[in-house]
Image (cartoon, rainbow, N blue to C red):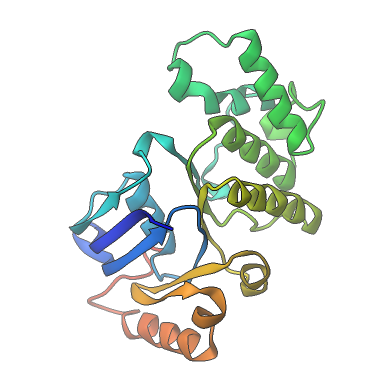
Length: 247
């Protein structure tokens, strides 16, 4: 299996202060990879570097067999403005924008595709519901429906199962495994190591720097977890600012 993207001596940060330093590794094409590490380890920062919202302070992210415009990104739910007057159908339709453009017309087949995605995540009949009226689990289902419509080769998920109910988590994990079975590359920031062990064959552990990357049983060891905590604690105070915007 060839590499989908490579981190080549990658350093990312804020205000010239590194939050992720000198990461050197490769994500295999079609792999299902969890990104784990202590709070402030740089996990969300790493995804932002892949998306391109953060310009590297050093090194680079190299896309090999995946085009950047075939990338779909789900940020943490706390970043979503639920007060925006948008219904579920419109939110999911936003996944079409790369194909039809910002002002393109949503055709009948596009509407059918949106309806199918809404039904696939268990929200059949919710198309006209305002997103502000949804529970946390329902909103996350709608956001996954938007990802389905995007039909991306590379899917990035930032804490996708935080603060949602167990049934929704199980349903959304089924979609993640389906993406994996279809040969898509999926990278997810996760905190629950039991979820990682049960569902993610590969794991990348960060503590500002790369701790380990490989098969999950080899990465999620007590030794690596202890080392990651030590590494983050060592840079918790001045002059480092690992915790700032570096989840």
